[in-house]
Length: 322
Image (tube, rainbow, N blue to C red; front, side):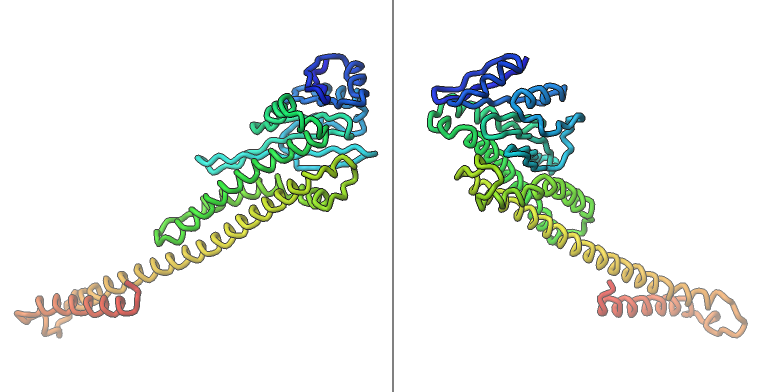
């Protein structure tokens, strides 16, 4: 048995029936059928729904994994679109992804959702309450789902950009803190976001030009959604570019810090070795060292050591080594 929704001018009706009943409902001219599958564990359920609606020309992923790249495929006037859903966890600076898969020929729609983000309930409520929205038919539903997903992208990329800017400010704040791990982590998360969005850009550009291979994708709202997705992709690219620049600058900072530390170590070693040399010379106890028999020989040697150390210290300070 398959759960599905029949959407017509008078409302949206949830039904449960066999594949034959689903096929008959899809044949009605004044309505369309939407099969919404939420994280199905059995790929056969997806296959049977597609077969009943004449969409079995598309291959169903038997592994039903969420770690797939976005994909668009058109066959004989029908279209398969796998769109990644994205949410950003601010507390951990992590990008998490799911997906929403569309199978449609303009008369019936099958969606398969996996992950946390779920744009479907809001669209279903609009179908139940909004006559004008129902009048848009299946293209309006597909547009609303796409729009909700891209809006989620927009919120996620804003949060990501805020964290990237915070990291940039921290790096150039003057604190001597190694933040390489933080930068690499954000680069990895940004790359995951980019991999979720960028493969859809060519598809978005075709929608923006309203020259898609299927007529029902020429809904007037798809152009604005496509333009929005392209802007999000550009914003992600800016984040990645900024992170790359920050990484290069921070590695330069670390190199400078290491040079400064090396200079300080060398300077203090030079200061420490001077009295050691003086003490070593007088520690040889040669017979012909008159200073050893002077009453002031010991304090003079201490004074000489202190004077040499002070002169070395001032020289190193003047040259920026200390």
